[in-house]
Length: 216
Image (cartoon, rainbow, N blue to C red; front, side):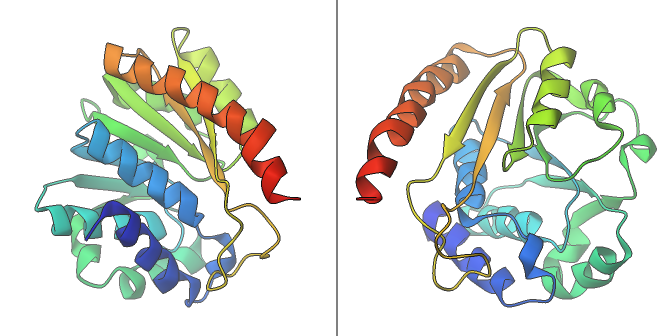
């Protein structure tokens, strides 16, 4: 199964569960799988896993591609914690679940860090980064992007947006665009820099041309 289809099927699954109003967008799931595939991600840290949409998607991808991806996530909300095991099924045993960042062991480093909540300990992510880690902020949480930019002076940041509206099978208003996200390369490699340049231009084209044409 292609990464695109894995993201779609995961979004459909979580669109039908309790608490679905706060799940990551289908487009965000596609971005995450694209980053994992393109940059050979083997370890993920997610801040605020919610009811499990993203870990389910990533671990389903790992199973399909026969890859090993270590998945660590934080969550403190009681409702979300009560839903995780049922939503993740067998994948629940494959995640390392923590209450917050402060209880993570030092000398633990991640290829990809996903920010999907307003974790008050966001500044602490620096000590869990590898030299060329990637940070993905789900949605348009610009206050968190600004914090990250202050932590990493060499960071390259690009916004990724969808040119499709919310799908009929999703829980969100159908007239809205299907989400987006912020990709930050803390100390970009040449390959990461090319990704950043390409998507800077492509996002601008989406805003100025494609979305306007679709609104006609």
